[in-house]
Amino acid sequence: MSQHAQPQIDGKLKGKLIAVCTIGAVGGFLFGYDTSVINGAVTAIASPDSGFALSSTMSGFSVSSALLGCVFGAWFAGVIADRMGRIRVLELAAVLFVAASLVTGLTTDFTMFIIFRIVGGLGVGFTSAIGPAYISEISPAARRGFFTSFQQMAIALGIIASLVVNDIYVAISGGAEMPMWMGLDAWRWMLVTTALPGVIMFFLCFALPETPRYLVMKGDVGKARDILVDVIGDPDADSTIEKIRRSFHSDENERKVSFKELRGKTFGLKGVVWISIIFVLLAQANGQNIIMLYDSSLWNMLGFSEQASLTIAVVRATLAAVATVVGMVLIDRVGRRNLMKYGTLLMTVFLGITAIGFGQGQLNADGTLSLSITWTWISIICTYAFFLVCCATTNVAVWVIISEIFPNRIRAKGEAVATAANWMFNFLITTIYPPMRDGIGLGWTYGFYTLMALLGFFFVIRFLPETNGVELEDMKAELK
Image (cartoon, rainbow, N blue to C red; front, side):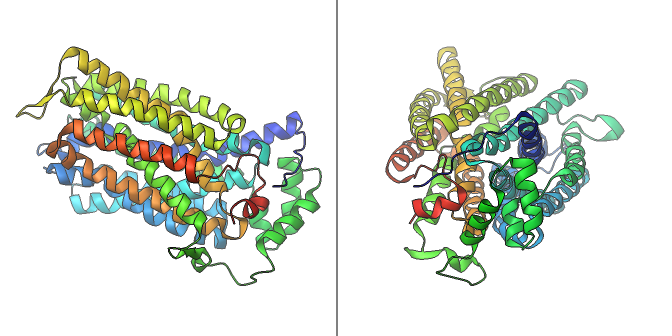
């Protein structure tokens, strides 16, 4: 595998590149905020007094319905991005965020609530697919993992912000179900507040340059050259442009790229597509998002108060941001495969202990779980140890890998499929959690997550290719 010698980027250019990647990751902040804000509102939304009087299954669907929008948003993001540009997709996502937050926070109709949860999910799908792709396309290969993981850091910060806001609102009102300002319950203000970062994201997008690869694809070589020189600091921009051009117009095919290009001999798809799909499946199936979406209600089950549960969630999210920084520092140094290999192994261990711990408890008629003090704290510590390892490894690596694993010609479509699959599996795991928890119990539920983490370990060491330091234009040679 041939790799370009990486140019030394001077301080001014590096500062400009950091600024561009930071703004490009703002969508990740909204992604984290929007998907986590529901955490503090789950119980109130299901309540017959302040919410919609939902069963456990419908309560799960009220949370996971947004993920359906994520699936469709991710699926169509590549098509829209190739036609309109990466920046326009991020702007569209911001508009969807604002609309969804206002309607879900104000409506009293459950059907309308679900529809606009899905609309907000479309915005999350757009940003989750295009945000990492944008950053990976505008970053030098030697530091691409670090810059692309800005997306995960922004997600972590968005999660912290939403939980802090939720915690403040509960402290002010006395509970998520209690009225706050203007006669609206606190949980409604939790959702409405999401509109503010959506507006900020929309206007920040105007400061972003398009990516050189998109501009070359559209024939705007002059602007692509300017960005390569002024933002990335490429000393041989013309050579890079020619290489990008060749990667889009290979000798084997001059047709317009469509999803048909993803077809191959491995069960109807190219091998790299299957690798990305199975990778995101196993990344979701270990139950990582259950912690993000349900940990407040989980600690309610163990006897913690609503305020204490939300405060624990804030601490968890803050530690997750620290873990994300660790992953950002490591990913270009140790490589994607090593980060994932050791991460999945540690997650398997912590999940296994958690499963044993929760298995010691007895479910009471009021929905709480009777567990000894010792096993309660062992379960809490191991649950969060698993989650923090996940933040430092899987959550950093997944967006980096699916944004760079595909050859240039099919990257937008391939990443759309991988990201859509990611959200589909997220939807399934999130939706079935309440019935699994209430049916087979927390112990067996976490036993299932343990098995999935173990399968993820074997998949990484057997099938996941190393893309660390490989130029995006060279990715095809590595993945034949």
